[in-house]
Image 1 (cartoon, rainbow over the protein chains, first blue to last red):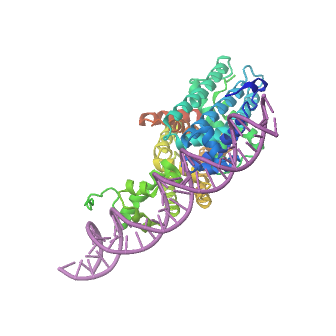
Image 2 (tube, rainbow over the protein chains, first blue to last red; image 1 turned 180 degrees about the vertical axis):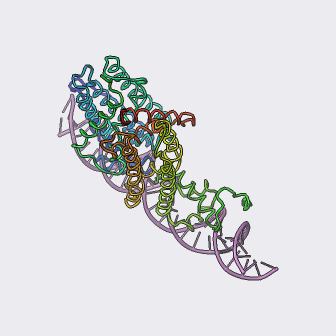
Image 3 (cartoon, helix red, strand yellow; image 1 turned 45 degrees about the vertical axis):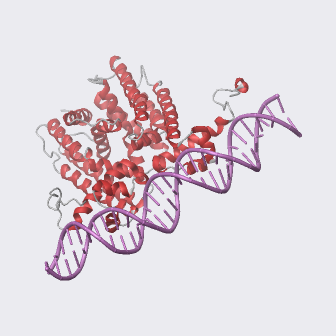
Length: 218
Length: 218
DNA sequence: GACGGATTGGACAATTGTGTCCAAAATATT
DNA sequence: AATATTTTGGACACAATTGTCCAATCCGTC
Protein backbone atom coordinates (compact mmCIF):
# COMPACT_ATOMS: atom_id res chain seq x y z
CA UNK A 1 0.00 0.00 0.00
CA UNK A 2 2.65 2.53 -0.89
CA UNK A 3 0.81 5.09 -2.93
CA UNK A 4 3.47 7.73 -2.61
CA UNK A 5 3.43 8.10 -6.37
CA UNK A 6 -0.34 8.46 -6.42
CA UNK A 7 -0.01 12.22 -6.66
CA UNK A 8 1.22 11.99 -10.20
CA UNK A 9 -1.79 10.17 -11.46
CA UNK A 10 -3.89 11.81 -14.10
CA UNK A 11 -7.58 11.16 -14.53
CA UNK A 12 -8.04 7.53 -15.25
CA UNK A 13 -4.50 6.47 -15.64
CA UNK A 14 -3.22 3.51 -13.77
CA UNK A 15 -2.50 4.47 -10.23
CA UNK A 16 -0.68 1.44 -9.04
CA UNK A 17 1.14 -0.27 -11.83
CA UNK A 18 -1.14 -3.17 -11.13
CA UNK A 19 -4.28 -1.42 -12.34
CA UNK A 20 -2.96 -1.92 -15.81
CA UNK A 21 -3.27 -5.67 -15.74
CA UNK A 22 -6.37 -5.48 -13.62
CA UNK A 23 -8.16 -3.70 -16.43
CA UNK A 24 -6.87 -6.16 -18.99
CA UNK A 25 -8.21 -8.97 -16.84
CA UNK A 26 -11.60 -7.38 -16.41
CA UNK A 27 -11.97 -6.71 -20.11
CA UNK A 28 -10.92 -10.20 -21.04
CA UNK A 29 -13.20 -11.66 -18.40
CA UNK A 30 -16.13 -9.66 -19.70
CA UNK A 31 -15.55 -11.05 -23.18
CA UNK A 32 -15.15 -14.63 -22.12
CA UNK A 33 -18.01 -14.60 -19.64
CA UNK A 34 -20.33 -13.10 -22.21
CA UNK A 35 -19.27 -15.55 -24.86
CA UNK A 36 -19.13 -18.74 -22.82
CA UNK A 37 -21.37 -18.07 -19.86
CA UNK A 38 -20.22 -18.34 -16.28
CA UNK A 39 -19.79 -22.10 -16.26
CA UNK A 40 -18.16 -22.22 -19.66
CA UNK A 41 -15.64 -19.50 -18.98
CA UNK A 42 -12.40 -20.95 -17.71
CA UNK A 43 -9.91 -18.91 -15.76
CA UNK A 44 -7.24 -20.13 -18.14
CA UNK A 45 -9.10 -18.76 -21.12
CA UNK A 46 -9.50 -15.41 -19.39
CA UNK A 47 -5.85 -15.33 -18.41
CA UNK A 48 -4.77 -16.16 -21.94
CA UNK A 49 -6.93 -13.47 -23.47
CA UNK A 50 -5.77 -10.93 -20.94
CA UNK A 51 -2.16 -11.85 -21.62
CA UNK A 52 -1.65 -12.54 -17.96
CA UNK A 53 -0.78 -15.52 -15.85
CA UNK A 54 -3.59 -17.38 -14.16
CA UNK A 55 -2.09 -16.73 -10.78
CA UNK A 56 -2.28 -12.98 -11.26
CA UNK A 57 -6.03 -13.23 -11.57
CA UNK A 58 -6.28 -15.03 -8.28
CA UNK A 59 -3.93 -12.52 -6.69
CA UNK A 60 -5.84 -9.50 -7.81
CA UNK A 61 -9.42 -10.64 -7.85
CA UNK A 62 -9.79 -13.74 -5.79
CA UNK A 63 -11.91 -16.62 -6.97
CA UNK A 64 -14.15 -16.98 -9.96
CA UNK A 65 -17.29 -15.84 -8.22
CA UNK A 66 -15.70 -12.63 -7.08
CA UNK A 67 -14.12 -12.01 -10.45
CA UNK A 68 -17.52 -12.29 -12.02
CA UNK A 69 -19.07 -9.91 -9.52
CA UNK A 70 -16.41 -7.30 -10.06
CA UNK A 71 -16.72 -7.57 -13.83
CA UNK A 72 -20.44 -7.09 -13.78
CA UNK A 73 -20.35 -4.25 -11.35
CA UNK A 74 -17.66 -2.39 -13.32
CA UNK A 75 -19.51 -2.80 -16.58
CA UNK A 76 -22.73 -1.74 -14.92
CA UNK A 77 -21.11 1.51 -13.89
CA UNK A 78 -19.59 2.19 -17.28
CA UNK A 79 -22.75 1.35 -19.13
CA UNK A 80 -24.94 3.43 -16.87
CA UNK A 81 -22.62 6.40 -17.12
CA UNK A 82 -22.66 6.20 -20.91
CA UNK A 83 -26.41 6.10 -21.02
CA UNK A 84 -26.91 9.16 -18.89
CA UNK A 85 -24.24 11.07 -20.73
CA UNK A 86 -26.29 10.63 -23.89
CA UNK A 87 -29.55 11.29 -22.12
CA UNK A 88 -28.23 14.72 -21.19
CA UNK A 89 -28.41 15.65 -24.84
CA UNK A 90 -32.13 14.99 -25.00
CA UNK A 91 -33.78 17.85 -26.91
CA UNK A 92 -35.48 20.21 -24.49
CA UNK A 93 -36.93 22.84 -26.75
CA UNK A 94 -36.54 21.47 -30.26
CA UNK A 95 -37.10 23.58 -33.34
CA UNK A 96 -37.61 20.54 -35.48
CA UNK A 97 -38.84 17.84 -33.11
CA UNK A 98 -38.58 14.89 -35.45
CA UNK A 99 -35.13 15.72 -36.67
CA UNK A 100 -33.67 16.41 -33.25
CA UNK A 101 -35.33 13.47 -31.57
CA UNK A 102 -34.07 11.22 -34.34
CA UNK A 103 -30.56 12.55 -33.91
CA UNK A 104 -30.74 11.97 -30.19
CA UNK A 105 -32.10 8.48 -30.76
CA UNK A 106 -29.24 7.64 -33.06
CA UNK A 107 -26.77 8.67 -30.40
CA UNK A 108 -28.58 6.58 -27.83
CA UNK A 109 -28.41 3.59 -30.13
CA UNK A 110 -24.76 4.08 -30.88
CA UNK A 111 -23.42 4.93 -27.48
CA UNK A 112 -25.72 3.05 -25.15
CA UNK A 113 -27.72 0.24 -26.63
CA UNK A 114 -25.40 -0.98 -29.34
CA UNK A 115 -22.42 -0.51 -27.08
CA UNK A 116 -20.54 -3.74 -26.30
CA UNK A 117 -20.65 -3.08 -22.57
CA UNK A 118 -24.38 -2.91 -22.47
CA UNK A 119 -24.78 -5.98 -24.63
CA UNK A 120 -22.41 -8.11 -22.59
CA UNK A 121 -24.15 -6.96 -19.49
CA UNK A 122 -27.65 -7.78 -20.64
CA UNK A 123 -26.57 -11.18 -21.78
CA UNK A 124 -24.68 -11.97 -18.61
CA UNK A 125 -27.49 -10.83 -16.41
CA UNK A 126 -30.01 -12.81 -18.37
CA UNK A 127 -27.89 -15.91 -18.31
CA UNK A 128 -26.48 -15.82 -14.80
CA UNK A 129 -28.93 -13.62 -12.96
CA UNK A 130 -30.33 -16.56 -11.05
CA UNK A 131 -26.86 -17.58 -9.88
CA UNK A 132 -26.02 -14.20 -8.36
CA UNK A 133 -29.20 -12.76 -6.92
CA UNK A 134 -27.59 -9.81 -5.23
CA UNK A 135 -25.80 -8.86 -8.43
CA UNK A 136 -29.06 -9.12 -10.24
CA UNK A 137 -30.62 -6.73 -7.74
CA UNK A 138 -28.03 -4.01 -8.18
CA UNK A 139 -28.23 -4.38 -11.93
CA UNK A 140 -31.97 -3.93 -11.79
CA UNK A 141 -31.56 -0.89 -9.60
CA UNK A 142 -28.97 0.85 -11.74
CA UNK A 143 -30.12 -0.46 -15.10
CA UNK A 144 -33.80 -0.51 -15.95
CA UNK A 145 -34.68 0.93 -12.56
CA UNK A 146 -33.06 4.25 -13.33
CA UNK A 147 -33.04 4.41 -17.12
CA UNK A 148 -36.72 4.03 -17.87
CA UNK A 149 -37.87 6.61 -15.33
CA UNK A 150 -35.24 9.01 -16.63
CA UNK A 151 -36.48 8.65 -20.19
CA UNK A 152 -40.05 8.96 -19.00
CA UNK A 153 -39.19 12.22 -17.26
CA UNK A 154 -37.68 13.64 -20.43
CA UNK A 155 -40.71 12.68 -22.45
CA UNK A 156 -43.06 14.11 -19.84
CA UNK A 157 -41.09 17.31 -20.08
CA UNK A 158 -41.62 17.43 -23.84
CA UNK A 159 -45.29 16.77 -23.30
CA UNK A 160 -45.54 19.52 -20.75
CA UNK A 161 -43.83 21.88 -23.16
CA UNK A 162 -46.56 21.12 -25.65
CA UNK A 163 -44.73 18.89 -28.08
CA UNK A 164 -46.32 15.59 -27.19
CA UNK A 165 -49.64 14.12 -26.13
CA UNK A 166 -48.93 11.54 -23.47
CA UNK A 167 -51.39 9.74 -21.26
CA UNK A 168 -48.73 7.73 -19.52
CA UNK A 169 -45.09 8.88 -19.79
CA UNK A 170 -43.75 5.66 -18.28
CA UNK A 171 -45.55 3.58 -20.87
CA UNK A 172 -44.45 5.95 -23.61
CA UNK A 173 -40.85 5.58 -22.45
CA UNK A 174 -41.03 1.81 -22.62
CA UNK A 175 -42.60 1.96 -26.05
CA UNK A 176 -40.10 4.49 -27.32
CA UNK A 177 -37.20 2.34 -26.18
CA UNK A 178 -38.84 -0.70 -27.69
CA UNK A 179 -39.29 0.94 -31.07
CA UNK A 180 -35.74 2.18 -30.94
CA UNK A 181 -34.17 -1.15 -30.15
CA UNK A 182 -36.13 -3.57 -32.33
CA UNK A 183 -34.07 -3.67 -35.44
CA UNK A 184 -30.86 -3.60 -33.51
CA UNK A 185 -32.02 -6.44 -31.33
CA UNK A 186 -33.17 -8.35 -34.37
CA UNK A 187 -29.80 -7.95 -36.03
CA UNK A 188 -28.06 -9.07 -32.88
CA UNK A 189 -30.30 -12.08 -32.61
CA UNK A 190 -29.68 -13.24 -36.12
CA UNK A 191 -25.99 -12.58 -35.66
CA UNK A 192 -25.79 -9.75 -38.14
CA UNK A 193 -23.50 -6.90 -37.35
CA UNK A 194 -25.49 -3.75 -37.95
CA UNK A 195 -23.74 -1.43 -40.36
CA UNK A 196 -23.13 2.02 -39.00
CA UNK A 197 -25.20 3.52 -41.79
CA UNK A 198 -28.37 1.74 -40.72
CA UNK A 199 -28.37 3.15 -37.23
CA UNK A 200 -29.56 6.53 -38.45
CA UNK A 201 -32.32 4.83 -40.39
CA UNK A 202 -33.39 2.83 -37.34
CA UNK A 203 -33.49 5.96 -35.22
CA UNK A 204 -35.47 7.76 -37.90
CA UNK A 205 -37.97 4.93 -38.27
CA UNK A 206 -38.53 4.64 -34.54
CA UNK A 207 -38.87 8.38 -34.11
CA UNK A 208 -41.28 8.70 -36.99
CA UNK A 209 -43.60 6.04 -35.65
CA UNK A 210 -43.33 7.34 -32.12
CA UNK A 211 -44.29 10.82 -33.25
CA UNK A 212 -47.08 9.55 -35.46
CA UNK A 213 -48.54 8.15 -32.28
CA UNK A 214 -47.70 10.85 -29.77
CA UNK A 215 -46.88 14.17 -31.43
CA UNK A 216 -49.41 16.80 -30.44
CA UNK A 217 -51.76 17.40 -33.31
CA UNK A 218 -51.77 20.97 -34.53
CA UNK B 1 -36.42 -48.46 -6.04
CA UNK B 2 -38.24 -48.12 -9.28
CA UNK B 3 -41.29 -46.01 -9.69
CA UNK B 4 -43.89 -48.53 -10.70
CA UNK B 5 -46.03 -45.93 -12.37
CA UNK B 6 -46.56 -47.43 -15.78
CA UNK B 7 -50.18 -46.36 -15.73
CA UNK B 8 -49.47 -43.07 -14.07
CA UNK B 9 -48.13 -41.28 -17.10
CA UNK B 10 -51.28 -39.81 -18.58
CA UNK B 11 -49.46 -36.60 -19.25
CA UNK B 12 -48.23 -37.04 -22.76
CA UNK B 13 -48.92 -40.68 -23.39
CA UNK B 14 -47.00 -41.83 -26.39
CA UNK B 15 -47.40 -45.07 -28.20
CA UNK B 16 -43.90 -46.35 -28.50
CA UNK B 17 -42.86 -47.06 -24.95
CA UNK B 18 -39.57 -45.37 -25.56
CA UNK B 19 -41.12 -42.11 -26.64
CA UNK B 20 -42.36 -41.67 -23.12
CA UNK B 21 -38.99 -41.30 -21.49
CA UNK B 22 -37.64 -39.63 -24.53
CA UNK B 23 -40.08 -36.79 -24.04
CA UNK B 24 -39.30 -36.60 -20.35
CA UNK B 25 -35.64 -36.32 -21.22
CA UNK B 26 -36.19 -33.63 -23.81
CA UNK B 27 -38.34 -31.56 -21.49
CA UNK B 28 -35.88 -31.86 -18.65
CA UNK B 29 -33.01 -31.07 -20.97
CA UNK B 30 -34.77 -27.97 -22.23
CA UNK B 31 -35.19 -26.74 -18.68
CA UNK B 32 -31.66 -27.44 -17.59
CA UNK B 33 -30.04 -26.13 -20.76
CA UNK B 34 -32.04 -22.93 -20.55
CA UNK B 35 -31.25 -22.46 -16.90
CA UNK B 36 -27.58 -23.41 -16.88
CA UNK B 37 -26.44 -22.92 -20.43
CA UNK B 38 -24.84 -25.62 -22.51
CA UNK B 39 -21.63 -25.84 -20.54
CA UNK B 40 -23.33 -25.64 -17.18
CA UNK B 41 -25.91 -28.30 -17.89
CA UNK B 42 -24.70 -31.68 -16.72
CA UNK B 43 -26.12 -34.89 -18.05
CA UNK B 44 -26.59 -36.02 -14.47
CA UNK B 45 -28.76 -33.02 -13.70
CA UNK B 46 -30.86 -33.67 -16.78
CA UNK B 47 -31.21 -37.34 -15.94
CA UNK B 48 -32.22 -36.54 -12.39
CA UNK B 49 -34.84 -34.03 -13.46
CA UNK B 50 -36.20 -36.40 -16.08
CA UNK B 51 -36.39 -39.18 -13.53
CA UNK B 52 -34.27 -41.36 -15.75
CA UNK B 53 -30.91 -43.00 -15.53
CA UNK B 54 -27.99 -41.27 -17.16
CA UNK B 55 -27.36 -44.22 -19.38
CA UNK B 56 -30.83 -44.00 -20.90
CA UNK B 57 -30.03 -40.56 -22.20
CA UNK B 58 -26.96 -41.86 -23.96
CA UNK B 59 -28.92 -44.80 -25.31
CA UNK B 60 -31.70 -42.70 -26.75
CA UNK B 61 -30.02 -39.51 -27.77
CA UNK B 62 -26.32 -40.02 -28.02
CA UNK B 63 -23.90 -37.49 -26.67
CA UNK B 64 -24.47 -34.05 -25.24
CA UNK B 65 -24.09 -32.20 -28.51
CA UNK B 66 -26.71 -34.30 -30.20
CA UNK B 67 -29.05 -34.08 -27.22
CA UNK B 68 -28.82 -30.33 -27.43
CA UNK B 69 -29.50 -30.29 -31.15
CA UNK B 70 -32.56 -32.48 -30.79
CA UNK B 71 -33.93 -30.38 -27.94
CA UNK B 72 -33.58 -27.15 -29.88
CA UNK B 73 -35.02 -28.55 -33.05
CA UNK B 74 -38.05 -30.05 -31.26
CA UNK B 75 -38.77 -26.85 -29.42
CA UNK B 76 -38.34 -24.88 -32.61
CA UNK B 77 -41.05 -26.94 -34.24
CA UNK B 78 -43.45 -26.67 -31.32
CA UNK B 79 -42.90 -22.97 -30.91
CA UNK B 80 -43.30 -22.23 -34.59
CA UNK B 81 -46.48 -24.27 -34.81
CA UNK B 82 -47.96 -22.42 -31.84
CA UNK B 83 -47.19 -19.07 -33.36
CA UNK B 84 -48.83 -19.78 -36.67
CA UNK B 85 -51.84 -21.31 -35.00
CA UNK B 86 -52.44 -17.99 -33.29
CA UNK B 87 -51.61 -16.00 -36.39
CA UNK B 88 -54.45 -17.75 -38.16
CA UNK B 89 -56.85 -15.88 -35.89
CA UNK B 90 -55.60 -12.51 -37.10
CA UNK B 91 -58.61 -10.27 -37.72
CA UNK B 92 -59.30 -10.01 -41.45
CA UNK B 93 -62.32 -7.77 -41.60
CA UNK B 94 -62.71 -6.39 -38.10
CA UNK B 95 -65.82 -4.51 -37.03
CA UNK B 96 -63.98 -2.91 -34.15
CA UNK B 97 -60.35 -2.85 -35.20
CA UNK B 98 -58.82 -1.84 -31.89
CA UNK B 99 -60.76 -4.34 -29.85
CA UNK B 100 -60.17 -7.26 -32.17
CA UNK B 101 -56.51 -6.49 -32.76
CA UNK B 102 -55.99 -6.18 -29.00
CA UNK B 103 -57.68 -9.53 -28.44
CA UNK B 104 -55.49 -11.13 -31.08
CA UNK B 105 -52.42 -9.51 -29.58
CA UNK B 106 -53.25 -10.89 -26.17
CA UNK B 107 -53.48 -14.37 -27.62
CA UNK B 108 -50.16 -13.92 -29.36
CA UNK B 109 -48.56 -12.84 -26.11
CA UNK B 110 -50.05 -15.72 -24.19
CA UNK B 111 -49.58 -18.55 -26.60
CA UNK B 112 -46.46 -17.58 -28.48
CA UNK B 113 -44.24 -14.99 -26.89
CA UNK B 114 -44.82 -15.67 -23.23
CA UNK B 115 -44.83 -19.38 -23.86
CA UNK B 116 -42.04 -21.27 -22.09
CA UNK B 117 -40.97 -22.97 -25.28
CA UNK B 118 -40.35 -19.74 -27.07
CA UNK B 119 -38.54 -18.23 -24.13
CA UNK B 120 -36.21 -21.17 -23.60
CA UNK B 121 -35.52 -21.19 -27.27
CA UNK B 122 -34.64 -17.53 -27.56
CA UNK B 123 -32.37 -17.76 -24.57
CA UNK B 124 -30.62 -20.90 -25.77
CA UNK B 125 -30.11 -19.55 -29.23
CA UNK B 126 -28.76 -16.31 -27.92
CA UNK B 127 -26.43 -18.03 -25.53
CA UNK B 128 -25.23 -20.96 -27.60
CA UNK B 129 -25.87 -19.81 -31.12
CA UNK B 130 -22.19 -19.34 -31.78
CA UNK B 131 -21.43 -22.88 -30.66
CA UNK B 132 -23.89 -24.54 -33.05
CA UNK B 133 -23.90 -22.50 -36.25
CA UNK B 134 -26.05 -24.88 -38.22
CA UNK B 135 -28.65 -24.94 -35.46
CA UNK B 136 -28.58 -21.20 -35.42
CA UNK B 137 -29.27 -21.16 -39.14
CA UNK B 138 -32.35 -23.35 -38.98
CA UNK B 139 -33.65 -21.35 -36.03
CA UNK B 140 -33.24 -18.17 -38.03
CA UNK B 141 -35.03 -19.73 -40.96
CA UNK B 142 -38.00 -21.04 -39.02
CA UNK B 143 -38.10 -18.35 -36.36
CA UNK B 144 -37.70 -14.73 -37.31
CA UNK B 145 -37.30 -15.63 -40.96
CA UNK B 146 -40.88 -16.84 -41.23
CA UNK B 147 -42.68 -15.03 -38.44
CA UNK B 148 -41.97 -11.44 -39.31
CA UNK B 149 -42.89 -11.74 -42.97
CA UNK B 150 -46.09 -13.54 -41.96
CA UNK B 151 -47.08 -10.73 -39.63
CA UNK B 152 -46.13 -8.17 -42.25
CA UNK B 153 -48.40 -9.90 -44.74
CA UNK B 154 -51.33 -9.76 -42.35
CA UNK B 155 -50.76 -6.10 -41.67
CA UNK B 156 -50.43 -5.36 -45.37
CA UNK B 157 -53.72 -7.11 -45.87
CA UNK B 158 -55.38 -4.84 -43.30
CA UNK B 159 -53.83 -1.85 -45.00
CA UNK B 160 -55.08 -2.96 -48.36
CA UNK B 161 -58.53 -3.40 -46.90
CA UNK B 162 -58.44 0.21 -45.82
CA UNK B 163 -57.90 -0.13 -42.11
CA UNK B 164 -54.29 0.98 -41.90
CA UNK B 165 -51.89 3.44 -43.47
CA UNK B 166 -48.61 1.65 -43.96
CA UNK B 167 -45.57 2.82 -45.86
CA UNK B 168 -43.57 -0.26 -45.05
CA UNK B 169 -45.41 -3.36 -43.82
CA UNK B 170 -42.20 -5.13 -42.85
CA UNK B 171 -41.15 -2.25 -40.65
CA UNK B 172 -44.64 -2.00 -39.20
CA UNK B 173 -44.52 -5.68 -38.35
CA UNK B 174 -41.25 -5.29 -36.49
CA UNK B 175 -42.57 -2.29 -34.64
CA UNK B 176 -45.85 -3.96 -33.79
CA UNK B 177 -44.04 -6.98 -32.36
CA UNK B 178 -41.69 -4.70 -30.48
CA UNK B 179 -44.53 -2.75 -28.88
CA UNK B 180 -46.25 -5.98 -28.02
CA UNK B 181 -43.30 -7.59 -26.34
CA UNK B 182 -41.73 -4.73 -24.40
CA UNK B 183 -43.40 -5.04 -21.07
CA UNK B 184 -43.24 -8.78 -21.18
CA UNK B 185 -39.57 -8.68 -21.99
CA UNK B 186 -39.01 -6.15 -19.26
CA UNK B 187 -40.73 -8.33 -16.72
CA UNK B 188 -38.70 -11.30 -17.83
CA UNK B 189 -35.51 -9.33 -17.58
CA UNK B 190 -36.15 -8.14 -14.07
CA UNK B 191 -37.25 -11.62 -13.11
CA UNK B 192 -40.85 -10.77 -12.49
CA UNK B 193 -43.46 -13.28 -13.46
CA UNK B 194 -46.09 -11.38 -15.39
CA UNK B 195 -49.53 -11.87 -13.88
CA UNK B 196 -52.08 -13.19 -16.29
CA UNK B 197 -54.21 -10.12 -15.76
CA UNK B 198 -51.59 -7.76 -17.13
CA UNK B 199 -51.30 -9.48 -20.46
CA UNK B 200 -54.56 -7.99 -21.67
CA UNK B 201 -53.39 -4.58 -20.58
CA UNK B 202 -50.08 -5.01 -22.44
CA UNK B 203 -51.89 -6.06 -25.58
CA UNK B 204 -54.26 -3.12 -25.25
CA UNK B 205 -51.43 -0.62 -24.72
CA UNK B 206 -49.44 -1.91 -27.66
CA UNK B 207 -52.46 -1.97 -29.92
CA UNK B 208 -53.52 1.51 -28.94
CA UNK B 209 -50.14 3.02 -29.70
CA UNK B 210 -49.80 1.04 -32.91
CA UNK B 211 -53.16 2.27 -34.12
CA UNK B 212 -52.45 5.84 -33.05
CA UNK B 213 -49.55 5.65 -35.44
CA UNK B 214 -50.98 3.60 -38.28
CA UNK B 215 -54.79 3.55 -38.23
CA UNK B 216 -56.18 5.17 -41.35
CA UNK B 217 -57.47 8.60 -40.51
CA UNK B 218 -61.12 9.00 -41.34
C1' DG C 1 23.31 -1.91 -8.47
C1' DA C 2 20.33 -3.73 -4.84
C1' DC C 3 15.79 -4.13 -2.83
C1' DG C 4 10.80 -5.43 -2.62
C1' DG C 5 6.57 -6.19 -4.46
C1' DA C 6 4.31 -7.97 -8.41
C1' DT C 7 4.27 -11.55 -11.90
C1' DT C 8 5.12 -15.89 -13.91
C1' DG C 9 4.87 -20.76 -14.96
C1' DG C 10 4.76 -25.15 -13.40
C1' DA C 11 3.25 -28.70 -10.26
C1' DC C 12 -0.30 -30.22 -7.39
C1' DA C 13 -4.80 -32.24 -5.11
C1' DA C 14 -9.55 -32.17 -5.35
C1' DT C 15 -13.57 -31.91 -7.78
C1' DT C 16 -16.59 -32.37 -11.51
C1' DG C 17 -18.21 -33.96 -15.82
C1' DT C 18 -18.20 -36.99 -20.10
C1' DG C 19 -18.84 -41.12 -22.27
C1' DT C 20 -18.40 -46.32 -22.06
C1' DC C 21 -19.07 -51.02 -20.34
C1' DC C 22 -21.67 -54.46 -18.13
C1' DA C 23 -24.57 -57.38 -15.33
C1' DA C 24 -28.89 -57.23 -12.94
C1' DA C 25 -33.55 -55.77 -12.90
C1' DA C 26 -37.73 -54.07 -14.86
C1' DT C 27 -40.70 -53.93 -18.67
C1' DA C 28 -42.81 -55.19 -23.05
C1' DT C 29 -43.93 -58.77 -26.57
C1' DT C 30 -45.39 -63.16 -28.06
C1' DA D 1 -44.95 -68.45 -19.21
C1' DA D 2 -40.96 -67.61 -22.08
C1' DT D 3 -38.47 -64.38 -24.50
C1' DA D 4 -36.80 -59.96 -26.26
C1' DT D 5 -35.96 -55.23 -25.23
C1' DT D 6 -35.16 -51.32 -22.34
C1' DT D 7 -33.68 -49.44 -18.24
C1' DT D 8 -30.87 -49.14 -14.35
C1' DG D 9 -27.01 -48.11 -11.34
C1' DG D 10 -22.52 -48.60 -10.43
C1' DA D 11 -17.67 -48.76 -11.87
C1' DC D 12 -14.41 -47.04 -14.82
C1' DA D 13 -10.90 -44.18 -17.73
C1' DC D 14 -10.17 -39.79 -19.26
C1' DA D 15 -10.18 -34.89 -19.62
C1' DA D 16 -11.00 -30.26 -17.92
C1' DT D 17 -11.14 -26.99 -14.23
C1' DT D 18 -10.52 -24.80 -9.84
C1' DG D 19 -7.76 -22.96 -6.40
C1' DT D 20 -3.21 -23.28 -3.91
C1' DC D 21 1.80 -23.40 -3.22
C1' DC D 22 6.30 -22.03 -4.45
C1' DA D 23 10.66 -20.91 -6.56
C1' DA D 24 12.29 -18.18 -10.31
C1' DT D 25 11.92 -13.90 -12.63
C1' DC D 26 10.66 -9.34 -13.91
C1' DC D 27 10.48 -4.30 -13.05
C1' DG D 28 10.33 0.12 -10.99
C1' DT D 29 12.33 2.63 -7.14
C1' DC D 30 15.74 4.02 -3.92
